[in-house]
Image (cartoon, rainbow, N blue to C red; front, side, top):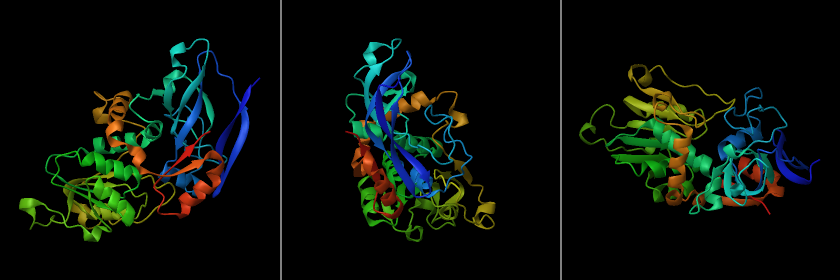
Length: 342
C-alpha cells in the first residue's frame, strides 16, 4: 500500500499540460526513493512534445530507465533532468546512499523510485541547479566529440539556445582559427559573445577568416558547422556554409517537421560529411575507448567551470507547469526554465 503521494507533470494533448497527484509507489528492496529539488526543462525537445510535433509511435528513449517503456502518444510524462535527495533506501541498498544529492534521468515529478544504478552522485562542488542541467552539458560534449574540431579550423554554430551556448563555450576552449555563432535573438547573441563566440544575426553576415585561403572559393565557408536551431530549414544554410570536405553536425531534433534541402549544387561536389549526433549513444568509432560512463565523468568534471545555471532564465513551481510550457511555446526570450520543488 502506498504511504505517500507525489505530483507529476503530464502532457495530455497538443498544447495541454496538467499536474497530477498520485500515490507514491513503495521501493523494492533494491530501490531508493528520491525527493526532487529541481528539474530542468529541455526547451527544444519538450517544446516539440508540448506542441504535438513528435511521432506518437516513436519510443520516448530506450536508453533511459524511466522512459524505456513509453512512446510519444498522449498522455505522456516526459523529461529527463531531476536532481534531489535520497530520502529512503530499500533493505538491500547500501545505507550510505541515504541523504545523498543525486541526479537521475526522470520526468518532472516530485518524488520517484529507482535503482541506485540509475543515479549519478552530484559532486560537492556542483550546485543542485547546475546538476539539473547535466543532460544539456552532456549533449554539448557529445556534439563536440562528434564534430572533432581540429587546430586552426573555422567553426560555425547555428542556434544559441542552451545547448548551442554550451557547445559554443566548449568550442571556445579549442585552438580554433575562428568561432562564429548565428542567432537572431540579441540577448542570446550577447551571451554567446561572452562565452567566446563571434555572434551574428544571420548566416548572410558571416565573414570568416580563412587565412591563406581567404581568396579561394570556400572563403565564406567553414570547416565545421553545427546545426542546433531545431528548425529543419536551417539545415540548408548549414550545407551551404560548409566548405569542401567539411563536416555538418546535426544536433537538432525536428520531430515531424520537414523542409526541402538543396543538395543539387554546392553539396553535390563538396564531399562534405553530414553527421547525425544524438546523446543517447556514443559514436561507433569511439566505442573502443569511450563509454557513456566515461563521458559522464567528463561532464561532472566540467560542471564547476561551465556553471550552466547561469543560463537559467525562469524558475517555476511545479504547479505552474501549464503556464511554463505555454510561455516556452510563445516567448522567444525564454532560454532555460527549471522547476523548483518545495
